[in-house]
Image 1: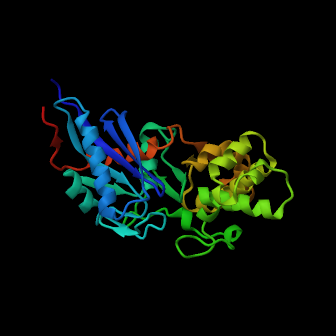
Image 2 (image 1 turned 90 degrees about the horizontal axis):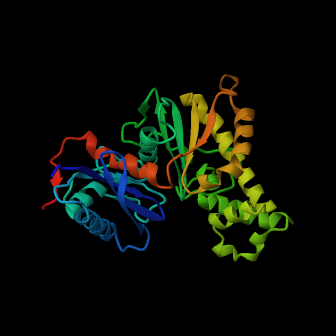
Image 3 (image 1 turned 120 degrees about the horizontal axis):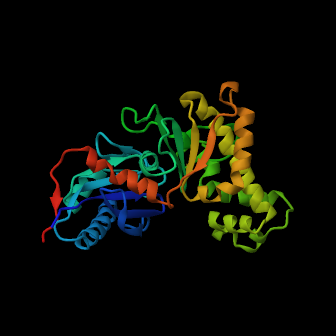
Length: 327
């Protein structure tokens, strides 16, 4: 029987973690999601991931080779294997690679979650053929993967592209989980969208179905559903969000000269309600040399696939001993 090679891709988000078995052809053959929150410690969290990986491996055909584990996670230090200062995770600092290799017994590699999404999109999605683009991941937090001349910008520790923590005047009155005020993610993350809705509910007399939802239970998904029904207040939430992102992208363009801005993540699911405001703000705020030439795209891959596929490609770039499933 011919041997088939697989890798494990893991996308760790602030709310959920997705674990997938990926064939070397780029297809996700098996997948599971577990909560990121609710675990007693990083060790128990990684232990749960390892248990799910074992189940995925056991479901593979005999003679399958699992080359290793790749993880996309906020604030990943690719050189040390540490997660360092992750404001949107339950544990801001922990030795992820060591814990994962001890628990799962496979070589493990990590990168920033947004970088993983950019790699996945460049390899399998709408960014195929693009050498210059910025991938904005809009979820529990906001990250970015920046590709220039076909190369992913990494930086000395893998932290290049923390665009969600660039500070802008439109968010000056919002406190970020990082401890500063004004970060982009306080507006354009899922929590930022909810905060905007709450503020509009307090300050505007616009009729809205969102007023029927308990404020503490209000979610970005609720706001998206209301927008789909042409709820005026929900549409204004996304117009404001799109304007903020477009304004930020005008600054981003000045340092990387991208051909496209690609939106990815849960909030990006509402892109159709934001994209017009994004384009208007980008054209309004951009330096003249960038006007009229930057496309705004949305990921062509299903919700978590770009990050998962990007993470899963990491072990293929390294030469470590393969882990082979017994017959």
